[in-house]
Amino acid sequence: MNLTLKVWRQNNDQSGGQFRTYQARDVIPDMSFLEMLDVVNEELISKGEEPIAFDSDCREGICGACSLVINGIPHGGQRGTATCQLHMRHFHDDQTITIEPWRARAFPVIKDLIVDRGAFDRIIQSGGFISVSTGGTPDGNALPISKSDSDLAMDAAACIGCGACVAACKNASAMLFVSAKVSHLNLLPQGKVEKDRRVRNMVASMDEQGFGACTVTGSCEAVCPKEISLEFISKMNRDYLVAILKQDTATSKE
Image 1 (cartoon, rainbow, N blue to C red):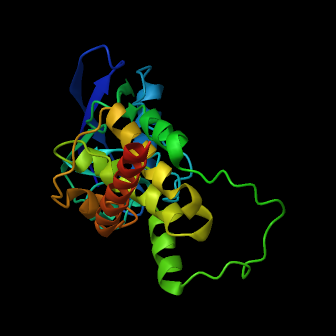
Image 2: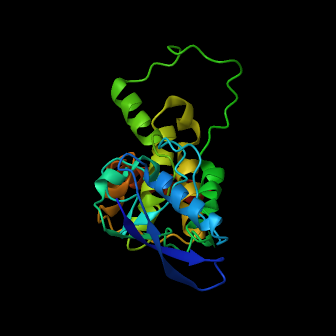
Protein backbone atom coordinates (compact mmCIF):
# COMPACT_ATOMS: atom_id res chain seq x y z
CA MET A 1 0.00 0.00 0.00
CA ASN A 2 0.97 3.59 -0.59
CA LEU A 3 -0.44 6.15 1.85
CA THR A 4 -0.43 9.90 2.34
CA LEU A 5 0.17 11.03 5.92
CA LYS A 6 -0.80 14.43 7.27
CA VAL A 7 1.19 14.66 10.51
CA TRP A 8 1.06 17.36 13.16
CA ARG A 9 4.52 18.85 13.76
CA GLN A 10 5.18 21.10 16.76
CA ASN A 11 8.40 21.86 18.62
CA ASN A 12 6.82 22.32 22.07
CA ASP A 13 3.70 23.60 23.84
CA GLN A 14 4.94 27.19 23.56
CA SER A 15 5.30 27.15 19.77
CA GLY A 16 2.77 26.95 17.00
CA GLY A 17 2.27 23.76 15.05
CA GLN A 18 1.17 22.72 11.59
CA PHE A 19 0.34 19.68 9.52
CA ARG A 20 3.01 18.41 7.17
CA THR A 21 2.47 15.87 4.43
CA TYR A 22 4.55 12.71 4.02
CA GLN A 23 4.34 9.65 1.81
CA ALA A 24 4.38 6.13 3.23
CA ARG A 25 5.32 3.79 0.41
CA ASP A 26 5.16 0.01 0.11
CA VAL A 27 3.39 -0.40 3.42
CA ILE A 28 2.84 -4.04 4.34
CA PRO A 29 -0.75 -4.67 5.57
CA ASP A 30 0.50 -6.75 8.50
CA MET A 31 2.58 -3.85 9.84
CA SER A 32 1.37 -2.14 12.99
CA PHE A 33 0.67 1.58 12.78
CA LEU A 34 3.83 2.36 14.74
CA GLU A 35 5.93 0.12 12.51
CA MET A 36 4.63 2.10 9.55
CA LEU A 37 5.76 5.32 11.26
CA ASP A 38 9.15 3.72 11.95
CA VAL A 39 9.58 3.10 8.21
CA VAL A 40 8.59 6.69 7.38
CA ASN A 41 11.09 7.97 9.95
CA GLU A 42 13.87 5.81 8.51
CA GLU A 43 13.28 7.43 5.14
CA LEU A 44 13.24 10.93 6.69
CA ILE A 45 16.51 10.23 8.53
CA SER A 46 18.13 8.95 5.33
CA LYS A 47 17.24 12.27 3.69
CA GLY A 48 18.71 14.24 6.58
CA GLU A 49 15.29 15.40 7.76
CA GLU A 50 14.03 15.43 11.35
CA PRO A 51 12.01 12.29 12.15
CA ILE A 52 8.45 12.45 13.47
CA ALA A 53 8.47 12.34 17.28
CA PHE A 54 5.95 9.89 18.71
CA ASP A 55 5.77 7.92 21.94
CA SER A 56 5.87 4.14 22.42
CA ASP A 57 7.21 1.59 24.83
CA CYS A 58 5.83 -1.95 25.15
CA ARG A 59 4.05 -2.01 21.77
CA GLU A 60 1.79 -4.71 23.21
CA GLY A 61 -1.18 -2.62 24.34
CA ILE A 62 -0.03 -2.59 27.96
CA CYS A 63 1.80 0.67 28.70
CA GLY A 64 -0.57 3.19 27.07
CA ALA A 65 2.25 5.30 25.64
CA CYS A 66 1.14 5.10 21.98
CA SER A 67 -1.12 8.14 22.22
CA LEU A 68 -2.17 9.14 18.70
CA VAL A 69 -5.37 10.57 17.26
CA ILE A 70 -5.81 8.89 13.88
CA ASN A 71 -8.33 10.38 11.46
CA GLY A 72 -9.96 12.20 14.35
CA ILE A 73 -10.33 9.17 16.65
CA PRO A 74 -7.95 8.29 19.52
CA HIS A 75 -6.13 5.02 18.72
CA GLY A 76 -7.79 4.85 15.30
CA GLY A 77 -11.27 3.65 16.16
CA GLN A 78 -10.86 -0.14 16.26
CA ARG A 79 -12.71 -1.44 19.34
CA GLY A 80 -10.45 -2.48 22.20
CA THR A 81 -7.29 -1.62 20.27
CA ALA A 82 -4.39 0.66 21.17
CA THR A 83 -2.42 2.40 18.41
CA CYS A 84 0.44 -0.09 18.71
CA GLN A 85 -2.05 -2.94 18.10
CA LEU A 86 -3.65 -1.23 15.10
CA HIS A 87 -2.63 -2.90 11.83
CA MET A 88 -2.36 -1.28 8.44
CA ARG A 89 -4.79 -3.79 6.92
CA HIS A 90 -7.55 -1.59 8.37
CA PHE A 91 -6.58 1.10 5.85
CA HIS A 92 -6.66 1.01 2.06
CA ASP A 93 -4.27 1.90 -0.74
CA ASP A 94 -3.96 5.62 -1.57
CA GLN A 95 -5.77 6.61 1.64
CA THR A 96 -4.93 9.88 3.38
CA ILE A 97 -4.38 9.47 7.13
CA THR A 98 -4.35 12.43 9.54
CA ILE A 99 -2.25 11.94 12.69
CA GLU A 100 -2.45 14.27 15.69
CA PRO A 101 -1.46 14.28 19.38
CA TRP A 102 -3.96 14.20 22.25
CA ARG A 103 -5.72 17.60 22.38
CA ALA A 104 -6.19 18.70 26.00
CA ARG A 105 -4.94 21.58 28.11
CA ALA A 106 -3.84 19.11 30.78
CA PHE A 107 -1.69 17.26 28.21
CA PRO A 108 0.75 19.87 26.84
CA VAL A 109 2.65 18.94 23.69
CA ILE A 110 6.28 17.97 24.30
CA LYS A 111 7.10 17.56 20.62
CA ASP A 112 5.09 16.63 17.53
CA LEU A 113 2.85 13.72 18.59
CA ILE A 114 4.21 13.35 22.15
CA VAL A 115 2.27 14.89 25.03
CA ASP A 116 3.06 15.22 28.73
CA ARG A 117 0.64 12.99 30.66
CA GLY A 118 2.20 13.83 34.00
CA ALA A 119 -1.22 15.10 35.15
CA PHE A 120 -2.30 11.45 35.41
CA ASP A 121 0.71 10.68 37.60
CA ARG A 122 -0.16 13.53 39.93
CA ILE A 123 -3.73 12.25 40.27
CA ILE A 124 -2.40 8.80 41.21
CA GLN A 125 0.00 10.34 43.71
CA SER A 126 -2.91 12.05 45.45
CA GLY A 127 -4.63 8.80 46.37
CA GLY A 128 -4.24 5.94 43.93
CA PHE A 129 -2.46 3.66 46.38
CA ILE A 130 -2.92 1.65 49.56
CA SER A 131 -0.73 2.80 52.45
CA VAL A 132 -1.47 -0.08 54.83
CA SER A 133 1.67 -2.10 55.63
CA THR A 134 0.98 -5.71 54.71
CA GLY A 135 4.32 -7.21 55.75
CA GLY A 136 5.05 -10.35 53.79
CA THR A 137 3.03 -11.51 50.82
CA PRO A 138 -0.39 -12.57 52.17
CA ASP A 139 -2.04 -15.82 51.20
CA GLY A 140 -4.36 -15.38 48.25
CA ASN A 141 -7.32 -16.75 50.21
CA ALA A 142 -6.63 -14.87 53.47
CA LEU A 143 -9.18 -12.14 52.68
CA PRO A 144 -12.47 -13.43 51.27
CA ILE A 145 -13.65 -11.31 48.34
CA SER A 146 -16.86 -11.95 46.43
CA LYS A 147 -16.42 -12.91 42.78
CA SER A 148 -18.52 -9.96 41.62
CA ASP A 149 -16.28 -7.47 43.47
CA SER A 150 -13.15 -9.28 42.33
CA ASP A 151 -14.25 -9.22 38.69
CA LEU A 152 -15.21 -5.54 38.85
CA ALA A 153 -11.90 -4.63 40.47
CA MET A 154 -10.01 -6.48 37.74
CA ASP A 155 -12.05 -4.75 35.03
CA ALA A 156 -11.20 -1.35 36.52
CA ALA A 157 -7.53 -2.25 37.01
CA ALA A 158 -7.26 -2.97 33.26
CA CYS A 159 -6.99 0.80 32.62
CA ILE A 160 -3.56 1.55 31.15
CA GLY A 161 -3.76 5.33 31.62
CA CYS A 162 -3.28 6.13 27.95
CA GLY A 163 -5.50 9.22 28.03
CA ALA A 164 -7.70 8.31 25.05
CA CYS A 165 -10.75 9.05 27.19
CA VAL A 166 -9.53 12.62 27.67
CA ALA A 167 -8.69 13.05 23.99
CA ALA A 168 -12.13 11.85 22.89
CA CYS A 169 -14.13 13.90 25.39
CA LYS A 170 -15.44 17.28 24.19
CA ASN A 171 -14.69 18.61 27.69
CA ALA A 172 -11.31 16.85 28.03
CA SER A 173 -12.62 15.09 31.14
CA ALA A 174 -10.54 12.47 32.94
CA MET A 175 -13.50 10.91 34.74
CA LEU A 176 -13.16 7.47 33.15
CA PHE A 177 -9.49 7.23 34.08
CA VAL A 178 -9.99 8.50 37.64
CA SER A 179 -13.06 6.35 38.24
CA ALA A 180 -11.17 3.24 37.14
CA LYS A 181 -8.23 4.02 39.42
CA VAL A 182 -10.51 4.83 42.36
CA SER A 183 -12.79 1.83 41.84
CA HIS A 184 -10.21 -0.91 41.53
CA LEU A 185 -8.92 0.00 45.02
CA ASN A 186 -12.22 0.96 46.66
CA LEU A 187 -13.81 -2.36 45.71
CA LEU A 188 -11.25 -4.44 47.61
CA PRO A 189 -10.98 -4.89 51.41
CA GLN A 190 -7.40 -3.55 51.46
CA GLY A 191 -8.56 -0.30 49.88
CA LYS A 192 -11.64 0.37 51.99
CA VAL A 193 -9.66 1.87 54.90
CA GLU A 194 -8.80 4.93 52.80
CA LYS A 195 -11.84 4.78 50.53
CA ASP A 196 -13.36 8.16 51.42
CA ARG A 197 -10.08 10.06 51.53
CA ARG A 198 -8.96 8.49 48.27
CA VAL A 199 -11.97 9.52 46.21
CA ARG A 200 -12.00 13.07 47.66
CA ASN A 201 -8.30 13.60 46.98
CA MET A 202 -8.25 12.12 43.51
CA VAL A 203 -11.29 14.07 42.33
CA ALA A 204 -9.80 17.27 43.77
CA SER A 205 -6.49 16.55 42.03
CA MET A 206 -8.29 15.91 38.74
CA ASP A 207 -9.89 19.34 38.95
CA GLU A 208 -6.57 20.97 39.87
CA GLN A 209 -4.87 19.50 36.80
CA GLY A 210 -7.31 21.32 34.51
CA PHE A 211 -9.44 18.46 33.20
CA GLY A 212 -13.00 19.31 32.20
CA ALA A 213 -16.32 18.18 33.64
CA CYS A 214 -18.02 14.94 32.61
CA THR A 215 -21.29 15.16 30.67
CA VAL A 216 -21.54 11.38 30.13
CA THR A 217 -21.56 11.37 26.33
CA GLY A 218 -19.94 7.93 26.27
CA SER A 219 -17.18 8.96 23.86
CA CYS A 220 -14.57 7.92 26.46
CA GLU A 221 -15.87 4.36 26.73
CA ALA A 222 -16.10 4.09 22.93
CA VAL A 223 -12.38 4.74 22.37
CA CYS A 224 -10.93 3.08 25.47
CA PRO A 225 -8.53 0.32 24.33
CA LYS A 226 -9.38 -1.68 27.46
CA GLU A 227 -13.14 -1.00 27.16
CA ILE A 228 -13.48 0.45 30.66
CA SER A 229 -17.20 0.81 31.42
CA LEU A 230 -19.04 4.07 32.14
CA GLU A 231 -20.46 2.26 35.17
CA PHE A 232 -17.26 3.08 37.03
CA ILE A 233 -18.02 6.79 36.70
CA SER A 234 -21.41 6.20 38.32
CA LYS A 235 -19.76 4.20 41.09
CA MET A 236 -17.17 6.90 41.74
CA ASN A 237 -19.86 9.57 41.85
CA ARG A 238 -21.67 7.59 44.55
CA ASP A 239 -18.45 7.05 46.49
CA TYR A 240 -17.62 10.74 46.22
CA LEU A 241 -21.06 11.85 47.43
CA VAL A 242 -20.85 9.53 50.44
CA ALA A 243 -17.33 10.75 51.25
CA ILE A 244 -18.39 14.41 51.09
CA LEU A 245 -21.46 13.79 53.26
CA LYS A 246 -19.34 12.01 55.86
CA GLN A 247 -16.85 14.85 55.84
CA ASP A 248 -19.60 17.47 56.24
CA THR A 249 -21.19 15.51 59.07
CA ALA A 250 -17.88 15.19 60.89
CA THR A 251 -17.18 18.90 60.46
CA SER A 252 -20.61 19.90 61.79
CA LYS A 253 -20.04 17.85 64.96
CA GLU A 254 -16.79 19.64 65.77
